[in-house]
Amino acid sequence: MSTATTTNAPPLRVEGLTKRFRQGNSFIEALSNVDLTIRKGEFVAVMGASGSGKSTLLHVMAGLTRPTAGKVLVDGQDISAMSDYDLTLFRRRHIGLVFQAFNLIPTLTARDNVMLPVLADRGEADSAALDKLLGQLGLTDRGRHLPDALSGGEQQRVAIARAIVGEPSIIMADEPTGSLDSVTGQSICKLLKRLCKEQGRTIVLVTHEPAVAVWSERIVVLKDGRLLTEFKTEPFSDLHELAAQYQDVVGMGPAGEGQ
Ligand SMILES: Nc1ncnc2c1ncn2[C@@H]1O[C@H](COP(=O)(O)OP(=O)(O)OP(=O)(O)O)[C@@H](O)[C@H]1O
Ligand SMILES: [Mg+2]
Image 1 (spheres, rainbow, N blue to C red):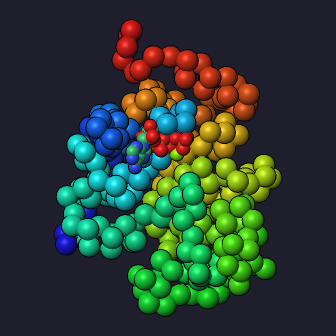
Image 2 (image 1 turned 30 degrees about the vertical axis):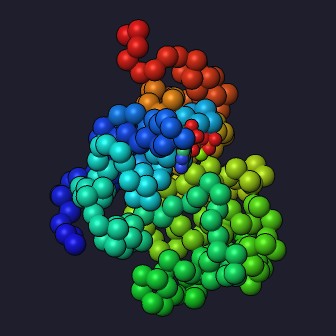
């Protein structure tokens, strides 16, 4: 497998990304010709109505699903051209993904679920670092429980711990605060922001909530599988203004139309 990294390449770039799914005798285009570049250390929120293609975009960018057309470049490397084996190794080292549906392994304890990617990659895990991470996520007393014995919010935090434990350079999270109360949700946002600011990690987060998106630097809005628009959060220091801006843009037609 090629390990060459293009100098100064952005951590994440997609070009002409299209994903079609077969549905019975027809096809549904979940993503249509999406171009997006994410800078190193940037915190980007992806928003859009249900069914607009947010999870599909994350899964294709994370290399879990192959695009129908277009390219996904991670650190300048075209992951869509990698073999399944190379892609699995590459993903494990570079990308941490928090699934919308958590995807925890039901027969493993919370602690073992979190440790799994590190064990798979390096064969051993740093127990003290793991304890610290579980503590930061309020899971210290939950490590020995199976996912079934955890609340939805606890399972979500285990899924977040699993995505960040291996210190990937890119963290992608699909509605990571969807099952959390607002205080816990805000503490997760704070943690992600810290990973971004202090460690230069790149964050792509899908959310429906302006109170979560406001933690990002840039909001990318999808509509019907297309990139409708994007805007920086910085001018909107007030959450209500940001929510109003988002409502304004989702009322618009697809990008480029009528302009
Ligand atoms: N595996 C699949 N097979 C067929 N259609 C799919 C598949 N995955 C997604 N789709 C369709 O693609 C479109 C985009 O789905 P996606 O899950 O990306 O939306 P989303 O923006 O994440 O929605 P939500 O906010 O509800 O999570 C939807 O119409 C969905 O039904
Ligand atoms: Mg989704």
